[in-house]
Every structure is written in structure tokens, then in C-alpha cells.
Image (cartoon, rainbow, N blue to C red):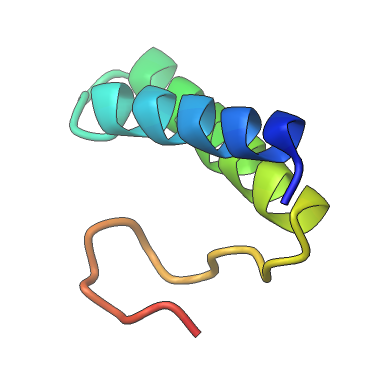
Length: 61
């Protein structure tokens, strides 16, 4: 695992969590940016990107 990938995944997680429940388009956009950053970090670390909707409770594959 790379430190850079772990940082991206962590930062993306925080950004997604802070904005995913907002109703305005700006919050939705920021939540998507967080998801994208999180998946970018996961790919750098050799993990598969998350494809399920946030909060769906699906186990990681």
C-alpha cells in the first residue's frame, strides 16, 4: 500500500461523508468528488473501486 493512496482514500472518505446528505447541487458535487478521490486512492493501492451506492451496507468485494 502506498501512503499517497491511503491519504487520498481517507481524504475522499471525509469529503464524501461531510457532503453526502446535503440537498443542494453543490453538496452532491462535492460528495461525488470525494467518491472519485477515494476510488483513485483505492486503485493506487491495488484495491477495486467501490461501485455500490454510499450507505447501502454492501460488503466490500
